[in-house]
Image (cartoon, rainbow, N blue to C red; front, top):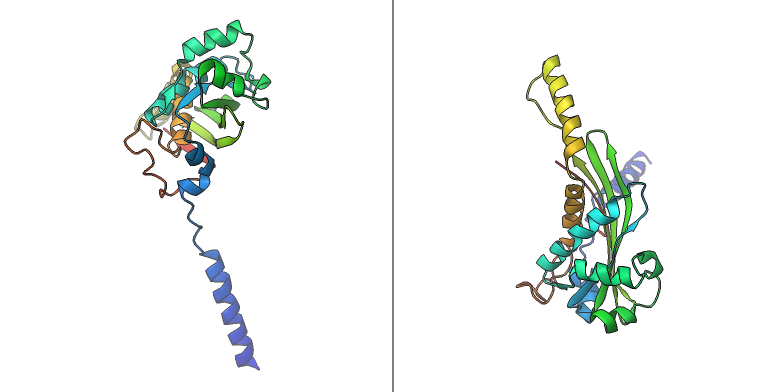
Length: 228
């Protein structure tokens, strides 16, 4: 009887152990971004960010940092400055009006294949750094179908290490970190978040890696990062 109990316990332990150490299933970019590979957007229109924070400058700061990483992925991005002027003239500056509305007018007016929306959920100082939580949603202009949806909760650590264990060294580090946080451009935090978000985006037509990254392992849709 004792031997039977020991065998049962041993088998149960092995089962639990195998479950705990099971590897996460590998998902390719082709599987995760199937719609993007199917539609193959070339021209992107970046809409002004939707700011859900109390930091009023977040919208303008983020908007200036979006186009570059998209262009580096191989997409043609309509000039954000030209787009901004037109959107303001047409009273279409608030993206909240369009994120859940038909987007075909942006295809006919701008020639955009897809429209890039962004939501700023967090942008604030915390401790000796800056917290940002940004989500990007890319929709096809003609169909409205979502082809990319990814977010990043990023903490940019701006603390300064004075390299001393003394009380004076600690005070110097604390003071330097406070000054660094105060004068550092908030846009650096947005750039870092953009880098993490778009690094998993399928390459566009103007990239040497276009259509050759289908088998690459995809990252998680929602990521967290601490960078310094």
